[in-house]
Length: 164
Image (cartoon, rainbow, N blue to C red):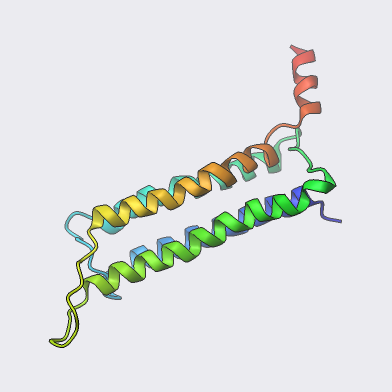
């Protein structure tokens, strides 16, 4: 039977793998699908540089946890619903906002017909800044949670202190 903490760990890994794969694929295919990035300055790759470390950190913690004998913490039953909200909520918000960001960036850079109202183009710097804000949401919530779920349990910490 899967514990709530284990379900949380699995969710973090699934979201991290899915978001990493989708963003990498999207940003690598951005030019052929019409995203207006400056490819001479490798703006699409700069966005990969901004986004990837967050998700690779979660995946690295999960990989370490898998082979570490000092298993992470469990969650008391009364906090299970809160755990689910704090894991799924930030990832869902991140996905929705990032999709909206890229759609906004794309729409603001497309050619307008003569009868359409003028739209100010979103700058690459604004896109990067908004993406960083979205990553901040994950760092403030999922980053803290993953350090507990994938970290060393209090019992294992005491055992480690007693052996030194």
